[in-house]
Amino acid sequence: MYFSLATLFVSALTLLSGVRALGPRTQCVETYRISNGDTCSSIGSWSGVTPSQIESLNPGMNCNSVLKANTYICMGSYTPVCTLNETATDTLCDALAAQWEITVDDFVQYNDNVDNNCDNLVVGQPYCVSITGCFPGNTDAFCDQ
Ligand SMILES: *[C@@H]1O[C@H](CO)[C@@H](O)[C@H](O)[C@H]1NC(C)=O
Image (cartoon, rainbow, N blue to C red; front, side, top):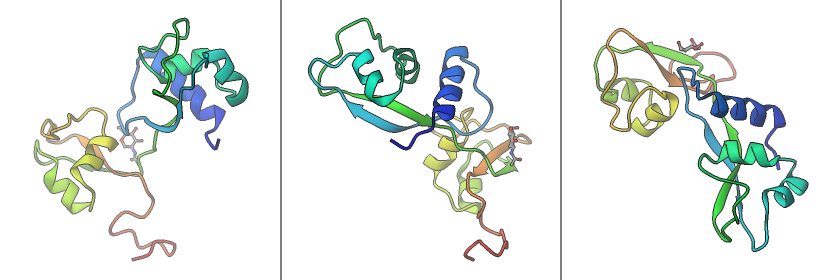
């Protein structure tokens, strides 16, 4: 278990409030396969993730109903921090993705206000193009050029 409680707490708050900041999407980084007889409380006792946190991490899941064995649930999530924004000059993300050497899927992942086709950008608005310090063009000594 390497997820931090602080991350979980922030994720839970974000999910509960339904408010999403503009930026990278929250990703599930820790999953668990349900065993026969598991309950949210039993999972909570060894993992430290409370039943209400489990419900927050798994929208639609109800800890009061019987958990289905062999299905996977999310136990920890992480929201990357954007390290570089770039202004859109097109409604498509292809050119920006190519320029910053990321895939279209990455672009969608980094921008929760962009649809899966990556074709609804607003010209003139900033979009996240990196979640690492070493984006193309960064000449910092610790970046492998
Ligand atoms: C990128 O833009 C988002 C949304 O406006 C902002 O919250 C974030 O701080 C910006 N990040 C950088 C590195 O400029």
